[in-house]
Length: 305
Image (cartoon, one colour):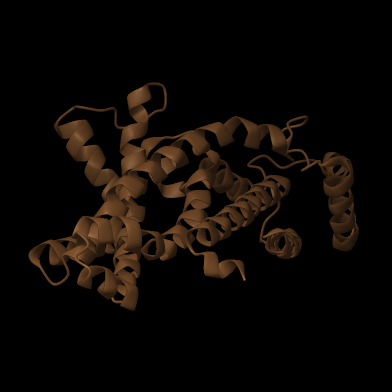
């Protein structure tokens, strides 16, 4: 177990290093400049601003300077267009919102997707199975920018049950969380169904049936533990993606999460903010994958070898 954790951490560090390097050079290869404004900036003022942010140095010098600040001082840098505002402050303000939305969304996905997949597997080739598969396929095929507005128009504008946008009331999280949750529930349902069908065809399941074990006991005590392994592997990265924020969902429902900052940073050429958000997202992915691996080991002892 310890060896696996150390191995995964080593792989995660290498992944983050490659991610930082690629992001750094890609954002600087973007067309345009962070200093492009509607009003022309005097040449001497532009030179001073570049000197202050270090963007007047060669790209390689900027890269090693950024790595030094990141590793030694844990500094993600400052915003280019807002003097004195740090990237860490922006992430610290928006992360709790994205975390809350992600936890609510993954909860909805688990509550809807896992039971639907298990029931579909138990009722294979029946109306229940076909209905669950059809609903899951619809959820997979419909993108978030279709499901979100449909829920907003139906529950918000039509029935007037909930607010269409905002994050001021406790009920404001329902529409964005349900939108994200239903999309991931569709994937979880198909993964849970496939895993359960594979386990239910094993010899020890047939032996349990031959011994007269009740169907509910076979599913809960024998099949559920191994059948959910594919779904558990999906939950880790999916949860990290929900926490980091869905750009489309946050835009539709005006959620003040991390997604809006990523879009604005790309538009305004805020290099340090883009790098900080990508690094933070990569850190979440690595951590979520590690937790997913540990959960799979707990479900399947054979993986400990």
